[in-house]
Image (cartoon, rainbow, N blue to C red; front, side):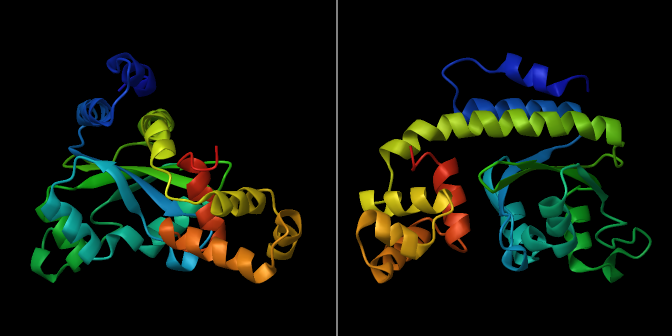
Length: 240
């Protein structure tokens, strides 16, 4: 696979759409020997409770449900590596997930699950945003584990794919912004590093009221904490 990001851009016509994005990424990872992909997000500010959440994928429901049921969306060695590093994480089902082809029934459930779905190997390509966002392009399929140079091509594809996904969702998110004006004001000031007392002083509101606004915003965004809420709101275009 040569310069996948260039191939990716050439496959997309304006106006961009999530369907076109899914098709283009699927074709490129397919040409690399993988048949499954997902663009996922990880709360990079709360490692203890971090889990990968699919944003866009070609996964069938059975695979998605099994992936979550077996805890693969929060498999700590993988998530920890993605949060703390910027390089592709290459895996194969035998080494990382303990699958033994000579004794499949004795292998751990995650390994059996992946092997049963033809996932011999894969790559997680992290994308770290300046607002605290961590995205991951995850690919898997029936081929042997790829080398670092080939994985670097998928890393470039990850950056391009998340950029297009953000553009596709940005205007729609702005139109469907669930936050009130006050919640947006509080998140904007929190993004600038202001504490609740400082935000209260700026907005001429009590610290208790500010905390209520931030708690409400965090709940609406299904965020794990205030910092994660700020990152999500910024990424989704709610603070523009």
